[in-house]
Image 1 (tube, one colour):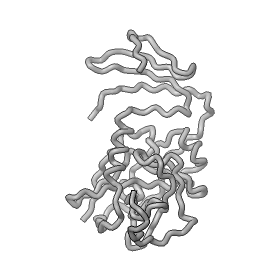
Image 2 (cartoon, one colour; image 1 turned 60 degrees about the vertical axis):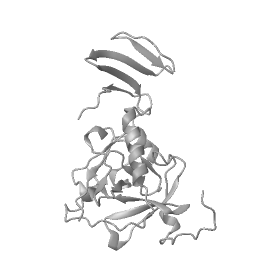
Image 3 (tube, chains in turn blue, yellow; image 1 turned 90 degrees about the vertical axis):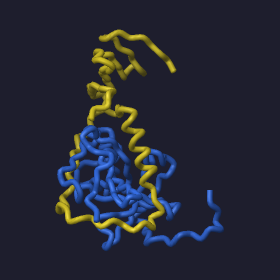
Image 4 (cartoon, helix red, strand yellow; image 1 turned 120 degrees about the vertical axis):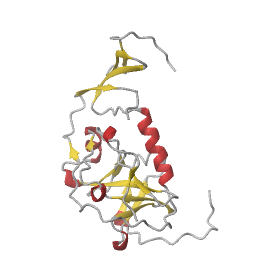
Amino acid sequence: MKTAEIAEPEKRNVKNENVIQLPYGLLGFERVKNYVLLSQPHEKPFMWLQMLDNASQAFLVVSPFHVVPEYQPDIAAEDVEYLGLSDPADALVVNIVTLRSSGEATVNLKGPIVINRHTLVGKQVIPNNAAKFELCHPLPVS
Amino acid sequence: MLILSRKPGESIVIDGRITVKVVRFDGDTIKLGISAPSDIPVHRQEVYDEIQKNNQEALTNNTLPLPRLAAGPLPQQSSISVSPANSATTIKHKVITPAIRR
């Protein structure tokens, strides 16, 4: 672990009301449970899902409906219940983007992060119909 | 690891509420039927593994220049389907085929 001697990277505008709790963490990052979702107009439709306690570590995410309009993950009943979703409009869905060294970008449609807009509790879920979605769906970037 | 021998049509029961049945052999593929309460997620192992690997590759120090999204489809309202949360006693039946279909 790095110590406090290393200058802390500049924190983007972090507001408490934007803290997203992922009690299960993300797959492979189960211990990191608190994130902030940072959205800046000039970066749209991308957002950063930044670790609350480590501002230098973040996942680039995108609303899948911007890139794959027909995307319709079928969220398992146990996840719907866990997140307390009673209506699709309660859910904020973001998907993790991977920037490749080649300059290409892909988005993971198999493991969306579903966040309850009201409680700001979320979970990376595997939809019932995950088999029909790509793990590395290419993004049309320039 | 507990290793049991089963013939097609035979089952094992886990915790009194999860049943795994060997449905049939299909070449080098074994078809398993899993009956579990709706609050027990059942997924292929490789789905977890590949999402985990993808997450690890995606983590950045958020200083990278963002790609510019080519003009694409217009944003839509969220269209996930939210099935009503079933009671925990509801049993779902799934047939899991371990072979990777491409």
